[in-house]
Amino acid sequence: MTKKRIWTYVFLSISVLLLYYVLRDVKYKDFMKQTAKVDLKMVGFAGFCMSLSAWFRNLRWLVLFSPLGYKIKKGQAFSALLLSYPANLIIPQSSFFVRASYLRKMSGIPFSECLGTIIAEKLMDGLVVFGLFFIFMFSDFSFQTSIFQNYRLYFAIILSVAVIFFISRFFFKTYFDERWEKVISQIKCQLSHFKIGLLTTKNVENKWLLFLYTVTIWLPYFALFYFLLKGSVSRDFIGVKLPVELAVMANIGWIFPTQGGLGSYHFFIAHIMQLHGFEKIQSVFFAFFSHTFIILNDLILGLYVLLNNRRIVFSLNNPV
Image 1: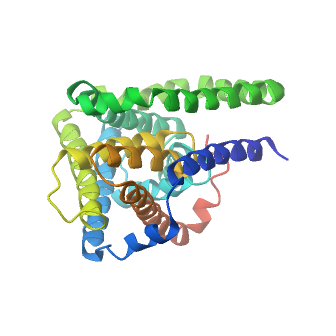
Image 2 (image 1 turned 30 degrees about the vertical axis):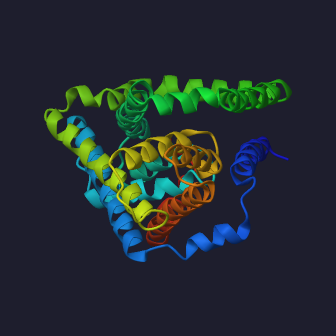
């Protein structure tokens, strides 16, 4: 058994444990009854919002390249973005490298500079996600109470991940040391290019355009959850706060080291839904419904790029 496969099983084990926690006491018949309530019209609106958010993300990425002097076609960058999403289903957080590798093959831009711009972009999104998270934490007493009431569960999850990591580190010390040295050496060799890409936000002339694109990325993403809610578990009035909270916690679930947010996404979304007064069956169904919708959307668009650029995609084995 290879070391990569062992890590895959470790992450899958975490996903299974979280899914078990979410699905406990949920009856299959009750779950399937919820599917009859799905409004495909609202689902269609959600799909449009998701595509719109991805397109503005692509435009923002191109703005980050402008100080570097590279001319990149919008279609090339958009293909790299769409192809990167399904990659996380195989290896957590691998989308960074797939996106940078693909664009390097398409346009010839150094891999390290591409990676630097992607990380700069992720840092901007991180400010949005965690900024909103802490706003909810300090402005919403019920949100604070929920977090602190379940601190034991959160602590157990974090502790389990840490224990798994250190046990694996102990048994595969040589492997980790070799991999770490390899990563460090590659970073040192490409450090100057990486810094150029990472710090490109400082050199963007039109920073207001960068800000505008960031806003237009997140507004459709918030609307995505609004339409998914209206199209599944809620026909009543939905305020602004719930879709925003769901979008924020969904992103934290994606960041968690599981394949495609499996388990972690469901845990956070179901928890927020119950916090807002939804029944458990509604909360669990929405978590699975929204996750499946996003995954299928990513897979379909990623497959389209894959089929149209097979030779380039299958030659991404040497990114640097």
